Image 1 (cartoon, rainbow, N blue to C red):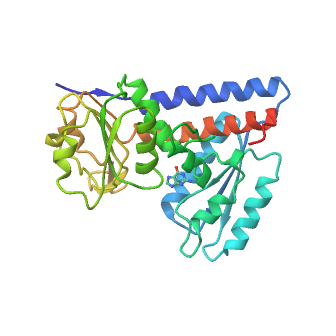
Image 2 (image 1 turned 45 degrees about the vertical axis):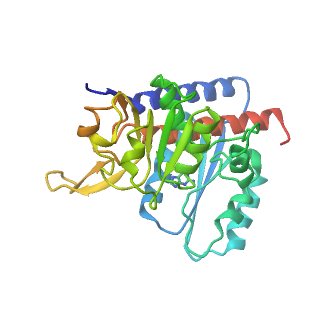
Length: 296
Ligand code: GUN
């Protein structure tokens, strides 16, 4: 059996076009363009690439985006002062603090400083807390986990009652996607660096999410035949046959996995593009919240 490819790139393009059309409609109604502020502290090269991609996507969708790049030595007070200014700026509907912050900064305190209705990344402690609780809904959910849920829906996954295994427990992907899967009534097992015998758990998974950051960690024989596999990994591995000297691989050994899985996301072109599409959607939503002047 060869797995169906879940085309994150194509799905994300459709979503981005939808956002763009909505932004055009807003303009025709005299409503302002949604505005996103990004904040990056320090010079993590991967973060810089991600933030640049987010700005480019905003520009293409007609979303105003303003970047703030602060030096690594910036104090806690200075970062939070900037967030305070962005909270009060009516042109800015969403605030994204690119993670990780530079060493020495208190991440929770920084995220807590964002006005809830501008928390387009969904990492404010109240939004994450609501995500973790039964009967409560966050105002925004983090972009990558939302993108994964969207792909699962597009792939026709039956989440209710499904056995889902999540590899990785990060604040950005593993934990929030596990919480979303629980909200979708899946039975969720979270595996991490101390889990014993991970393959015995993944082999039972109807839905497998790999978010560990280890190239080709998941082998073909770890996968239940017909399972839906979502590969969140974006790992560089040396490859002298490529002009740039490396290629990107996921956390799943793709060629092995596609012979077993029912559906699988490629890397690149799977989850990655969905992260940006979901951020744009959240920013549009934040602008709508501002229109309605909903007090949260
Ligand atoms: N760092 C890695 N992924 C993300 C993300 O989705 N949002 C933010 N803010 N930081 C990240």
